[in-house]
Image (cartoon, rainbow, N blue to C red; front, side, top):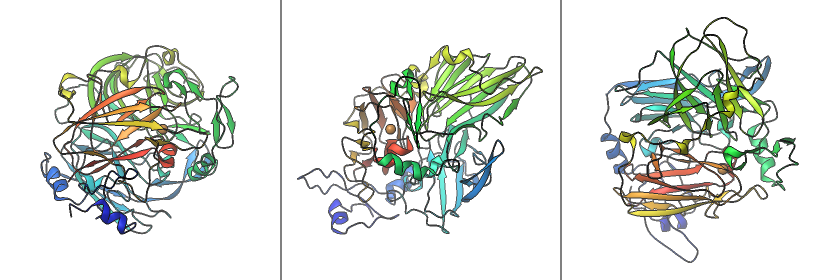
Length: 502
Ligand SMILES: [Cu+2]
């Protein structure tokens, strides 16, 4: 039902749902009747039909439910897809159709967002925008063509649920993969508090009370309740994060009970890193090895040598490593928080590294995404934008009023103030971080070109004071979230919508 106007929505109060169509552009004193392409618009189906499909179906059963997990001998209560964290990896080939049957056994409504997939809008998993939230005891079938090869993941898009155990790596293999390697490891990083110190909802409630957020006394991070004061990082331009986590996990395991990857020496490994954290950037390194960065967010980059990589929440990086002989620490330093996640890579004899080791690679050639250059075939063709939107990241810790252009996201009017684009346009989003904290900004449904020749990405870190131009072609009609992937910032209001005019 294309063509419903903002006026309809405003007059009718809140009437969101799978069929909701939402208006746009309500500034004070201004009434517009522009209409936007909603998730059930025929143009969404048309875009799906244009995607190249293998016709193969890949079925997945997803039953998020309360469960218990073992963290190095301590049992904690959490919510997860099944009994493990992360959930069991989903792997398909480009063009396969994913059919995921969600049965919600949680006490709260939920959805699934397929992070990194430019998929059909009605399967994007944003409650109140692209679908109704799935109530406890109810089910929903996600069905879409997975068109984007690469390292991705999925998680709920409701409240702080992703800061529980609800995250799963999702790999889309490229049938035309040009890289050669012997083995592949998926390494999922997470900051963990659920069931140890209350729940993520408790943390959000505490943060919402606001705080006088000084930079600490210079003696390093200090805990106050759920809040961490004084966590700073040069790589993140200052304040690194504000939430205290008792554990940092690599593939669901804390440093006290690390995962061990085993392979013969000389093995060429593709490592796929995913940061599934809520409030933590990780600086990763493999002791005794350099890494060759090949992809970020699923898109190839010109190969770059790195000793360490800084990975923001929601970002992914693929690297190639040729393994030496021995036992090596795979370390994920919680940036600015001075604690580490840890796993072991073993190719031969020798004693295992200590869990608190800080390999010198962490302070070697440290690569961040904006250091990288898109591989030529992955770069968006140069072109002048047809439409530009300025998106200022705003707010702060004092009032916990994180927002976009001074506006906090309104769940009752999600597309109010939407950034309008039209199908076929070249779009430029000019993002400026006016706050004194870094933000990993995620755009759904598209992969932007960062600057003229930076990487193609869906999740881009903006440091305090930084401005980046993010270009994309408007080729996937619908209503698309753009938001901070710090789950607490997003929930506080640093979320907005890019909407296609009907
Ligand atoms: Cu943020």
